[in-house]
Image (cartoon, rainbow, N blue to C red):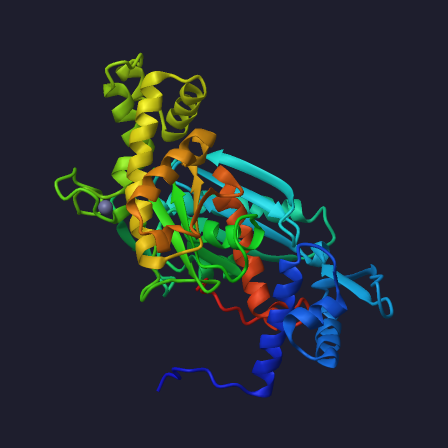
Amino acid sequence: MKQRYRTANQIWVREHNLSILLRYLWGARGPIARSELTKTSGLNKSTVGNLLFQLREWNFIVERGTSEPSVGRPGEVFDINENTGQIIGVEIGISEISVILTDFKANPLWRKTYKLSVKTPDLIFNQAEELIAKAIQKSHSNPSPLLGIGIGISALVGKDLETLLFPPDLKTINKNLSKLWQEKFDLPVLVANDANAATIGEQLLGDNVLPDENFIYIASGEGLGGGVVINGKLYGGNDGFAGEFGHITINPDGEKCQCGNKGCWENYVSPQAILSKWILHPESQLDAQTMLQKNSEEIMTMFSKAIAEDDPAALEVLKDIAQYFGIGISSLANIFNPKSIVLGGQITICGEKLLPIIRKDVEKRLMPVIKENLEILYATYGQDSVLIGTTALIINAILNNPSEWCPSEEKEIIYSVF
Ligand SMILES: [Zn+2]
């Protein structure tokens, strides 16, 4: 029978405490004194000393001099070691693939974006493999080892990691990319839905949320996805498909969506929706024929430029889009009562004029107790959120189970991001 609740033995308790201490060190975002770690973790002095010794042995942390407290003796100061190893992150989007090589603190060492010349999943995977091989080659110029490869893919990824559903038609493909690429590259590979990768990226590498915060991440692009973080943990749902906010019905008589439903939220806030409204606006100066040839990135770049120049038609469309964001966001706030709702991806290019209109709209829809502490913010890495988030998949897995990732031992990686 499957064990429903994990019982605690000494090994598990030690693993758990190693993870907690490493998370405190990560959350400090810089050097932190041993005494401070003892105070904040609630662990006793000798346990902290023992765990720090182990984490240093494994090279995850380094000592950075001593602290000079106002009272008592100076103590050692520790920090996450950016030279623990390198990480490869890959964002597989609808029209392009981006790859990044970073150190353990996600500082970029090299990155590249390639337009996708092919659209079928198997050919896209082949192209991704070529880029991963290039990144591995680049990593050889740095002496620190490769820790793993994080993949954020523009598809629904089942908890079983076998089921992938690809837009636009959400056709199901059974392919365990984690397993396949782990064998091919002889490195741990974690695959996640792109919005989930961006959510973990915001949590671990962003400026907006605290480590144990309840927050919702909304990833905007051609579709609309997201992640729900409850008590610091990403919620996957029963099968791993939680967070498909884009398919919430906001208009029962709306247009048919690719998912089969009608009036889905994403069809009211996507670049294509923006373009249609913008072209149809009576004061629009756009040439419909030319505009319909443009991809979503080009549309959003033109739209943001028009907003910055106070183009009346673009500003009207912005208000309309903000209202639809407001409708969806207030529904999410009512369901989850989060501390923050973070908006990332392509929509962030609209800049500072969008958020105040969304906030005002949400304000009028929510009960005082829900809206009182709610913050609506742009993601720290804007359009780069998914790519940066792919490296956070590996960092997150290491923070969860440091002993499984220590350089000298045989790895038994837990693949799931939930
Ligand atoms: Zn839909």
